[in-house]
Image (cartoon, rainbow, N blue to C red; front, side, top):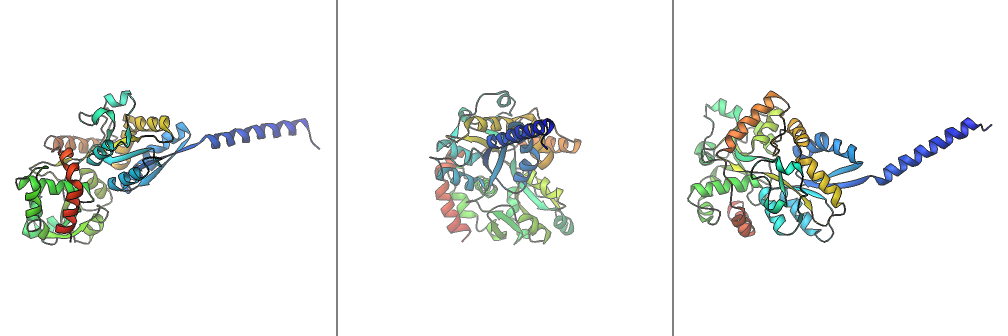
Length: 350
């Protein structure tokens, strides 16, 4: 028998169901291109959830190297499939030049960022600060009685024959950075890479056991004893150490290379306001503190607080090394990068 109470309960349930359905209907999805692996885990587990909950949105990562993400964004320029993308700084310069980014909206976060981390005309901004230096297999070095590396030219030391792992300069910022620092040491510049191409194969190249497209294999190669020394960032080293991999970072005396991961909102995307809101959140002290806690990120927001004394110590060491870090001439690099990639693949990795 239907009672007034039952009718009332049914009505309340129906309203609740309708409200729930409406909420689901209003839920949107933002696609963000970024590096996979630790970077993706850090953001999907530690940074995005609060934004998703507060804005009734799902953030989905499109994983890939900076080159992969740039290619995807370029292919879909007329009808973007992504909303925000993270790219290494040099690749971001290319993206901005190709008209793939829209200007970041003004906000308090932009004023809190480290000097040099807001790119030209506010088209992009640093999300994670880094540098490429040298990393080494601490277990192997201890067993051999080797001193920690101090120079990029240590990659050419005969004792490391078939123990150097080198990321491809045509596919990886780490490999490109290391090659360009070697080129500088040989007397070249970003506008003149002849010294590097002429001398690489008979110096560092002789020691390389494998050229790798990214750094995913380094963990395995350290544990198997195949890798003694390789280009890497302090963040990359910290992540490997957290997994129990015996590696350490070394700052080359010639300087490390500034490697900033920058974000931009993709021009003409389907959710411009929500995309700008996500971009602003990711630049905030709150979000960057989470990235530091979950994935050893180095914040560009100078007001972000380290979660532990140990994290603060790492940040202090990073800031000291940044004083000798080198900023490359990306205009010169990008003007010749396709030509360099072809030469590298034919001359070095053949």
